[in-house]
Length: 366
Image (tube, rainbow, N blue to C red; front, top):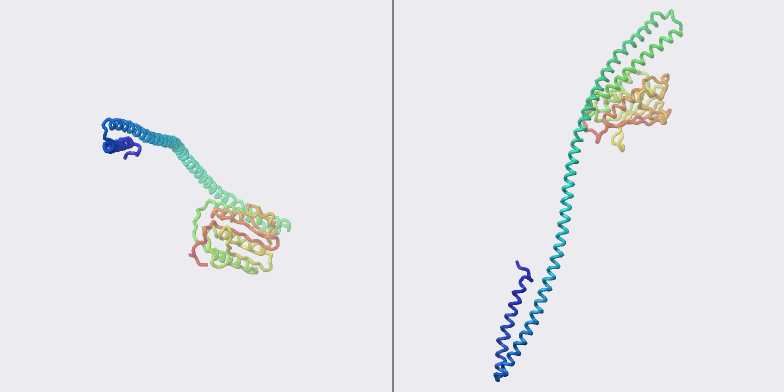
């Protein structure tokens, strides 16, 4: 398709031919009709020819000038477009260079990332292997402690009791008191070994999560505690239908420790109240064990869940200080956390979560 200014020369020729033809045709006839003198006619025809040349020259000048101006305008426009295209081309070239650079950097980044996802996998395998070795060593150590320490303790306890029974007549009151303390210390040492073994076992045992009826579990443990001292006046309030998503064996250890502590620390109350239930909070569902026992000073709450930390003297309440540390270990293995609230003389409440995103589906009764 031709542009308008490209057809301009052809249009000029057409206009000129049309004008010249019409001029010659009509002007000659008009002169013959007006002038009859041959000499006079020749002069007028000569003047007409000059006029024709002048007029056509003027018209050609005007048309060609317009044509040139149009061409110049188109050339300027074309020049501007060409400059724009050059700029776009330069930008595209820069973008292409940047794209190639980015692509190269991306390849390098991917390679570095691959070498890093590989290095981390190697380190994870090494750490896992080291952890497995440490667990095996811990298990071996636990069995060694269980076997090597229990035998001397049994001897100490056995010979002490034998002295009390067989040689009671040869011992004064002070000697009998010493032997009684030796037996009590041996028993406490045995309980401490049992608690340490339990703390170690909850750290390495496999976690088998499923829906567990904590209400049923709490009622079972409460009945067992009540059977150890039927004379005590203790009121258990166990919420119905409380379920948790966790390992059944480990959750039993948690409730045994928490309900056992509540039973122990309400021992001096004429009418003890122990409660188990669940509440909804910012972290989701939280389970709790509450009692109206001796409580504790909140200034020392940070020590409560550390091993061997006791907030009461041994002559007040027996224990090894391992129970709540075991509770924390089990709860943390489930992805939850444990905390306490209390006040001296009014009781304590221990809360714990199990890292649940939502309450487990009903499946167990209780």
